Length: 208
Image (cartoon, rainbow, N blue to C red; front, top):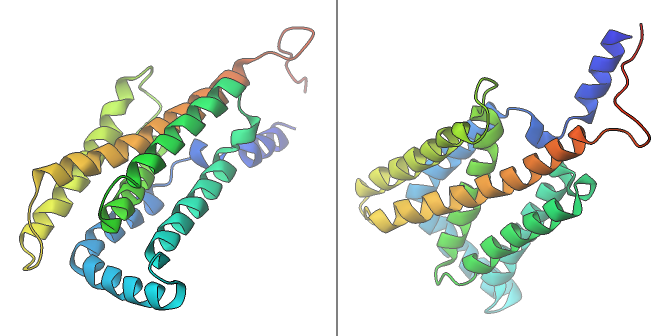
C-alpha cells in the first residue's frame, strides 16, 4: 500500500514540482548557440515568412511562439487547479511579460525574453533544493540567470557582428525574473491547495 501511495503521489506531481536540470542545461546551450547563428536564422525566417504570410509574417511567428509557450505553461502547471487568486496573479504576470515583449522594436529581443523566461522557470525547481525555506533559495535561480546572461554577452564580444552590451545583461536578467515570478505564482498556489484540509474535518492518515 505504501508503494502504491508513492506511485500515486508521483503521478500527480506537476511538471514544475520536479527538477529538470538536463532540460535547463539544454536551454542554456540553445541560448549560447543562438549568439553566433541567431541573426542569420532571423534573416532567413523573416524572408521566408514575409514571402509566405506577407509583411506581418514575423509577427505571426512570434505570436505563435508565445501562444504555444503559454499553452505549454498552463498545461504543465495545471493552472486550472490552483486557487483563483493564483490564477489571476499568474495571468497578470504572463500577460505583462507578453505585452512588454511586443513593445520591443527587435523581434530577436522578444525571442531572448522567451528563452530567459523559460530558463528562469526551469531554474527554480532545479536549483531550489530542500534545505532552504522561505525566500532564501531565490538567490540561486537569480544568480544562475544572471551568469548565463553575462556569458551570452561575453560570447557576443568575440563575434565579429555582435557587441557586448550591459543593457542586454539587464534585459536577459529581466526575462529570467519573469520566469521566476511565474514559477512563484503557480508554486505558491499548489502549496496552498495542498495545505487545505478535506471538507468536514482534519487530515486523516491511511491505515496499513
